[in-house]
Image 1 (cartoon, protein in one colour):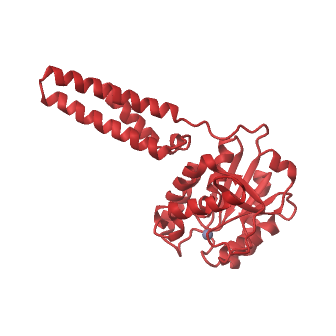
Image 2 (tube, rainbow, N blue to C red):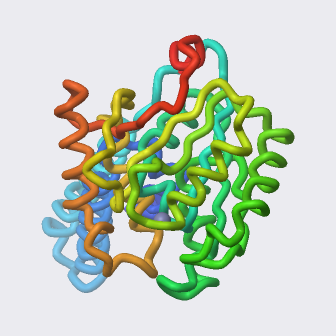
Image 3 (cartoon, rainbow, N blue to C red):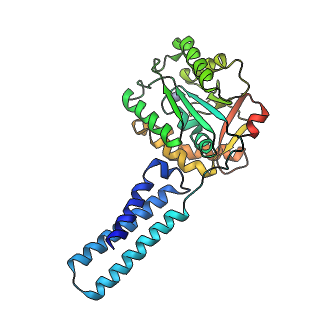
Length: 295
Ligand SMILES: [Zn+2]
């Protein structure tokens, strides 16, 4: 019985790890079920030690064993294989101004792309120290990128809230990333955004990617009412992943736009526009139709 108990707790611990967590359809539910089952087994084991009643021992042993098997069964049946495998993997470069921008705006899309076999890399321009602890935010960005499955994350320390002063340097950084990574699609901030840093990154991206054929602008919480998307990504299987990715930014969880309710609400609103349950929305600057078909 001790072995069953240990296995159950290992499953519960594994569910807490991002690499396993990301492949679950209902990770939170499974984690709670596994922890409840493990706790039940712990109590049952302790009872076996402190009582010598044979009948009770057998009952507790049976209960614990069944509980462990049930937890494992739930873990196995809840395994989710991710998105539809891509016939032709593409490279996607996602560019954000601040450490949490990518998770908030396109976290579901990026996780879905990764699970479909596409390669995704991130580029963040500032450490966001005006909005929190710079080191913590930088670490959170790396945790978020790892959770979504990005193959690379480049983090720069241009001055937070004053990115427009660094437009030339940002253009050079983005040009370098495009030259190295050769992305098929570029994701960036929209011009319809009231945050000056987001606008600065949008402009820098358009200048750096002036020869690129496919640029999509994502929706940040600071997007204005003029944000008018016409491209949508169904994130029905990735809503929980997006919420979890946003929660990686522990330094920012007090902000109203970081709450699961707000994140899910925006996705639900965009999902209604896309005639889906939940979606992330994009304004295309320009988009080669063949690139979209291959995603
Ligand atoms: Zn931002």
